[in-house]
Image (cartoon, rainbow, N blue to C red; front, side, top):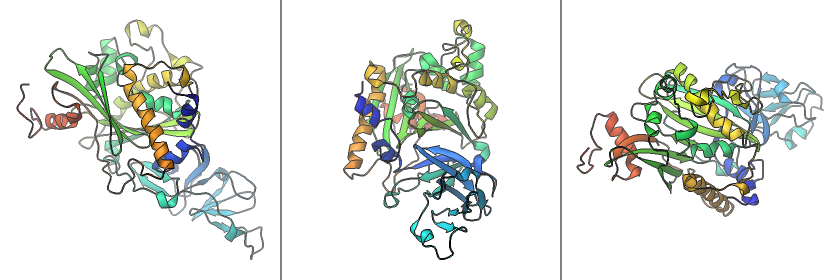
Length: 433
């Protein structure tokens, strides 16, 4: 369990907090591009790390991200006029530029020095992979933009899904750190439901892991952040079923998928201390995505501007108790909603002094200790994970059958060999399969 003080350090994300400062040292998603697709269109509100912002695309097509409230009298720029180079407040006509300069104060004398003395909070942005990214930290600490494998894929091979979650980001992120929970929370009893969910969405790998609900969990630190491996026994003692996830600072993960399956990258984006957005980035460089099957399995389709599904704690996430008898373990439809149900049921920020962690929580424990250490290292001026020039962001997660005596870290080699039609990775020692 955590102390109350450490729980705060791991959940508070506002300006000036240790974790908030840590997150601001990375390029992070601010919005999906569909929210600002129209040049000169209405600005959209963006809640990010405890700050109230607006994103927009000016009439020339240039995107921007700035503080929501005008520095004059505080009127919301979400109502503002979208003009070339920035937003103009409706109240007194002040125009705030994309770069943070005050470009016009028409109600003030022409020679006013206020335009020179004042600036408006704004952040640099970049468009990639259907997402508007931003960097909110010190300019002299800006890291290279992370070129993830999916950021340059064409639309038919990429699906970006944004979904609101009514809890602190950590409760969601730690679900992805937990290799044991799919055997329970995501188990289907009914064969037809199973075919419609995981297998129907092209993820046979989830069905394959259900044979062992107590995997051996391994964790190691990486230059990007950390790697988790879950090794499951199979009916053949010589074979193991291995799932690995790659974690990239500050809150990104490659979710394990099997040979020839579409892949999933996730981001847990804090709005404030008590709510977050989950970005699900489904991608497949080899073929077009089956979008209807993905939505049917995950249940995470949500529309702007709120990106909320109908499922809430108040309506028990539409849980069907009859379905729990012979349908699925949770009585909740959709893998993303199943995750949200248990994570939101904890409340906005769970009191982790009341936890009782076990061996299945090994990766959660490792992550918490690692982030707390990275916060101390940041305060000491040390380099943060994933920020060094030349850092490799071409990771992949894996879910694959492989020899039980092979190192779990080689799962990606084995999945790539199987996708290439090979019995084992090139250069691997002879094995009896």
